[in-house]
Length: 298
Image (tube, rainbow, N blue to C red):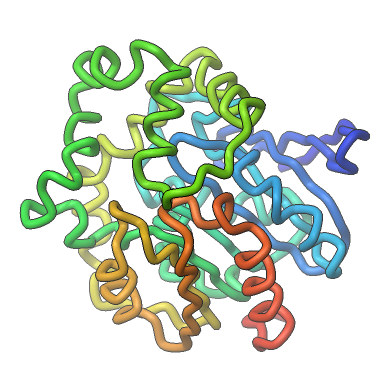
């Protein structure tokens, strides 16, 4: 596995590509020090971490924010969107970057992957930070959460989803972000345009929907053997209290699987917590990262 780099001078970010687990992933990188991976959610890409990359790098970390499999500039294979393949992508990216372990941070779908990662690869996860994301085997996906999870069920019917959700990409982006945000609106027109641009990459919307189409089969089957496993590395949950989708009850559900947990509730944020209240989220991350012991494998 190898990583290549080109420079984005305007933001002191480096853009690169790494081949991991048979897929090429694009990423943005800044800084030197212990590795932090920032895993984005749906329907985003690395840009959702734009407020955190610089401050974390200046605090002494090597920060890498990839486009997950199928998103933006990363490769879009036909398959490989099950949870076990996605966690293996993360482990492979860590190795491609020349490291054996990392702090793994995830929001939304990135958080779902992050919650599973230390179960699958405990020695590769120094610390874990999860933001507004349910477990892969969560009540969130089940019948008693209907109709809040209806959008996920619609993803299983790609033609219907494209007609109902993605006929107008610009309008869909605005609707999705505004729908589960707090009352204020932290996105500029340039931000909306950036997210829409990434989703217009050939195959990106189809790939994003495949994450949801794997939840009930095979993800539920693949994680059956892990259902009683626990997250043992130092862990922080950061949660937007006004999230109407992944509500606080799902944070509490996930907390039952974690041994060493700190929580930080962001009262004035909804689902997109790191974008809605970036200063508070970054400060909470740094407080955790600079005061908690790591699980680094020697």
